Length: 571
Image (tube, rainbow, N blue to C red; front, top):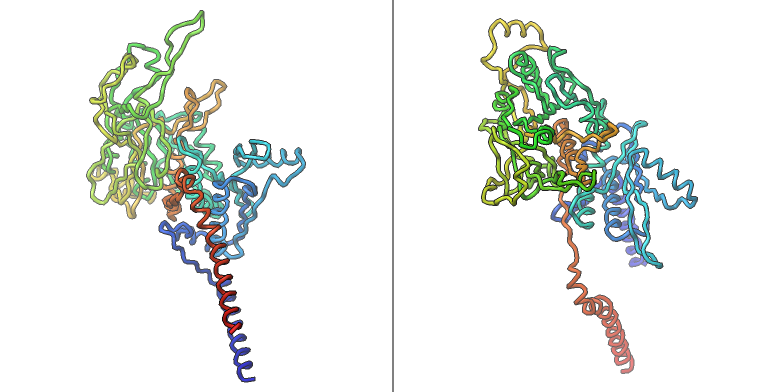
């Protein structure tokens, strides 16, 4: 009786401990991530956003199909893991549901549902799957919709990377899951959308040439404004960032006032995306004059400002014989119809990046058009990060120079292209000093000091950041014959999509992001794939080890145990 009572007491105590552990685990989430790259952990900025939720956020996943291939199933599992982590830190404030559109059996209802998803900004993907009767194509939606406070934010979960295999694309898509979800939640929970101003007044790109990036920014909950420098005394602080896209008119003389406005905006903590050409090279001029164009350096009066901040745009034209775009040229006529061929145009380099910065990490090539190179200037307190550069076989052709189509008649000599990785885009971070220090008269200083918003600031009170790109056309979209805009980065002559839009968006995200959310793009997930050739060669061995050996061991143990029992009880 004592032994029985003691056993029951121990059992009861164990059950009480288990119940208490379950209650504690319900309120306190804890998980040990043993992966080397911390695959199953979310970053601190993500935790801060989730814990700061004031209302319920609902995430609807439309990749609920059950018979997908292994790569998409792994993507599904990664999505569930991320959302469970969000729930762990957000509790009842985070809800998610997984929807399978293929459960809709009525064809008309399914078509209506798919059309509705596409109208909300979710992109479908045609997936070829193996069936019993052969191969079939299916439309799936690797997408999600984040809903908060009556607003929604579409997310396309599958990346579209040029030149990568399916496994690499799915792996990169998994890497960006946390960033995409937390960025959407952060955008929806902000008390006001981020405001970005496109600067006007000095011959910048026309509205239609910036239509694609403007539409993309608006779809991502940005508020885009146009701001003419000459029509205001200063740039308002309400703008989280400003874009200066390919100015063509000089900032010298009367434009000094506009330079001062930009400078003081930076001193007050404003962020700037500079897209400035170093020369006057244009394709239209070349097509008009087949003898070529004399390319001169373009002096628009911003050199002194950029030099003070830590960068210098050179008056040269970059060529690259490794990565470049092609251009069509008329080579003859067949009847009355002109015959064209595509030729390599080394003045249109495709820019790449090999650093781990979140702006340019895992980025496809960015198409440039008559880009110039950038030199960084020694400036204590300002850090410089090269975001985009050429390949190892490039050169910078100093202006003035002649650019012409005659160079296409022969192959380039690699010996002349010996300037590797010429920088074309650079990030500057730190406490900037004003370019107008000791340049203003005492009378002007006194006049400005009378108005608080115009008061001169010699050095920024806190660290700031700006991005300098030595090609204004990186942000320019092509225009169709019907006056509609092509997507930014789409090259109409080869029908290829480059990463210009992603690069510009990442730049703006980084400039306006004070929470460090863009850092979540630095997450790395290593693919640990089987060696398919070796697996096929050793297929029988591993089948025997994993199937036959365990069964054999169980049989041997059973026979030995039976033999032992018979010997024991027979005696």
